[in-house]
Image (cartoon, rainbow, N blue to C red; front, side):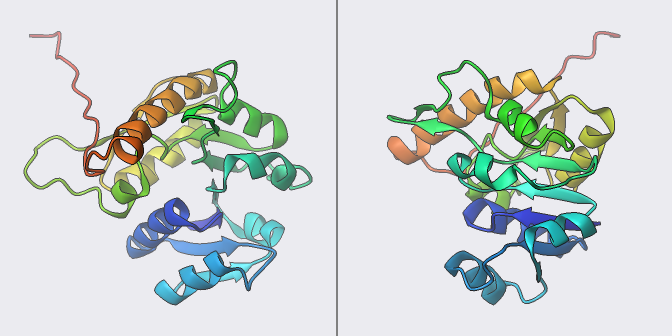
Length: 213
């Protein structure tokens, strides 16, 4: 698939680089080709192509949003997604690593409000970029879980396929309102790692008992 990335910093690059290695075509969506993050990404992976934001969206099968959350409203308004899947990798973070929208509504629901013609799926937010760069845990039979939320079944299926490509087990948590709880999981991870100094190389696992036995 052709994947457009709006935002190519730590999270965006880690995902884009690994997905390019899996055979997907990566388009960096930017209106500033000379920005530091864009130039750094192109230096580290020469297989990325570059387009203006709307041109990248137009040619993409799936669009990733990996910008700082506070930039999302101004950035998304005026863009046309024409029903494409928009994977929201962003998190609203407030003072003291709190929820930036006071836990009243999820950031993904705001993204859907700002991009009404997109099919928004919350994914790739419950860990830091370290686990997107390397999801391999060879000593365990269980795959790392990647929890997702969204209102559109086909968009979640597209997202689940990309999640599987990266070595995670996709776990559908329901509608987009569930994104709020995934954002709280992100805050839990961030506080444990960025604030308290725990190793970033840990993930969540998903186990479900077979009730037929």
